Image (cartoon, rainbow, N blue to C red; front, side, top):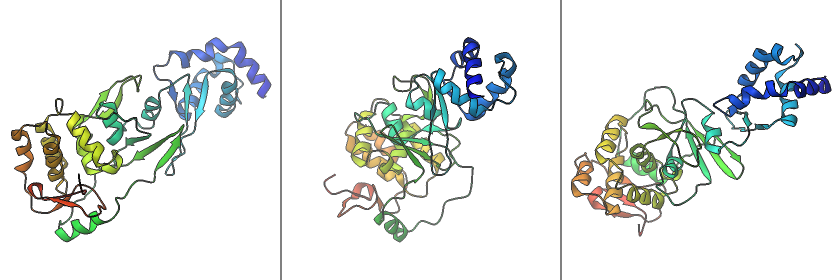
Amino acid sequence: MAMDLSTRIRVAKRDVFAPFEQSETKVFTLAEIRELVNHNRAHWRLPQSTTSEEFLEVMFKLSPLEEVRLDFPNRPKPRYTWGEVSLFTLLHSLDPNAYFCHYSATYLHGLTEQIPKTIYLNVEQRMRGGGGTLTQGGIDRAFKNKCRTSKNFVDHKGRRVYLLNGGNTDQLGVTELETSDTASAVRVTDIERTLIDATVRPVYSGGVHEVAKAYKTAHDRLSVNKLVAYLRKLNYTYPYHQAIGFYLERAGEYRESQIDLLRQLPMHYDFYLTYQMDGPEYASRWRLFVPKGF
């Protein structure tokens, strides 16, 4: 069967390769491969008994088609690529509603000089209840501990890829961006949303020093008005605006009128720039604990 199938595909090579070569996308799911085989079976003169797996086995030998195993712990997501495909394009195929965020978005927007070895892709959860009562004791306890991070990641060609399941934001601030790294347009958080996400989870964004650099680098592109509008929509329980105001002031690039947009928001509690700081210093203007020497 394998030899016979191989011969048939060689004979019909031009017709078999055509749908892959003409497709706008060069990344396919197993379901899409099955649909191609079933739709073209007669045209390609494949035996009725030919399975998608048998078809793939031969195509791996005769064509540029390759299998990419992305075995995330929560759910493996194999993909099939035709020719050279950028990693961002490959990952963008994992979910039509997914978008790049945190350090990946920082990188794609050119807000860091680093080339991150970790990529973050977010698929929002369904809308659900949240919030809770905020107390100073609760804040203190939470930020004295290590920040919780996702275990849903896979290592691929020297990069670590996280598939996050963030809270539902109704895709707030998600836009499309095309760079030399993506080769085609991919969905990514805009600059304002990226900086908010980086403030909320600096562990996913290269750490507080990288976040601070991003705020400084973004000064001529960031709309503080839009950022504050996003904050109001996101309606976080924690007062992240105190950390954002600190970053804006520390950057030394923003007008006092812009910084005042954050100062006008309520500051009822002492807050923390990041988790598990050893001997932090206190920035009284923002009621904020920051790393020593920062």
